[in-house]
Amino acid sequence: MSLFLQRFIYSAVLVFMLAFGAASQVVRPSLSVGFMNGGRATTSNFYFKSGLSANVTAFINTVNPKITPGFSIGIERLDSETLIPAGLEYQVLLSDKSNTGFLTIGGGYAFAAKNEEYEKTDGFDYQGGAFFNPGWGFRWSLNNGDHLFVAIKYKHQFMKTEFHSQGMDVFTDRYNYMLLHFTTGIIF
Image 1 (spheres, rainbow, N blue to C red):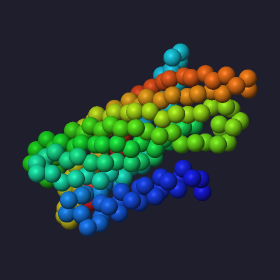
Image 2 (image 1 turned 90 degrees about the horizontal axis):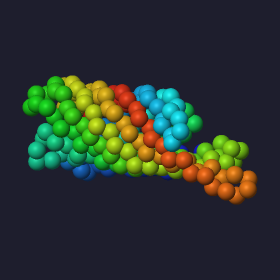
Image 3 (image 1 turned 180 degrees about the horizontal axis):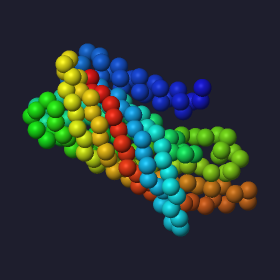
Image 4 (image 1 turned 180 degrees about the vertical axis):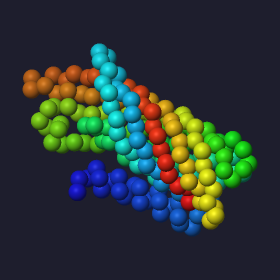
């Protein structure tokens, strides 16, 4: 198992354990999966990209139950790139009803996972970058206090790639992902 995958699993387990631990009255864990569709814009081209995501979020109960901040960590796979996004997310409920719509906004930094085989043969070194993702969703209350939800978000991911040529020159290309991110999950 690669060091990258080990670190991701340990981080996700830590967030999940903290959410279910002694502070479970204060912290509500959430698991979600998603599909991303859009593209990557470089300085000279636009490339279609799609991918999958999985996230663990620890939402914190606040004095105002309509506003819920949380810390999130996940994994995203976009064709040849694997990213580990970590950041903050806010959900703002649109009503006091148990089944209600919500607005969401998140942001943070996505770390690029090392793909040793690809980087050694082609000389590319993917760098991470900041991201933000506003969106809208709807959640349904379950009998035990948990919630199922669906959401659609716009995700803007800043990235950088360095290419190391055999002549030891380094070329840098900055690009942006512009994606629609469809997610579904459960808040415990």
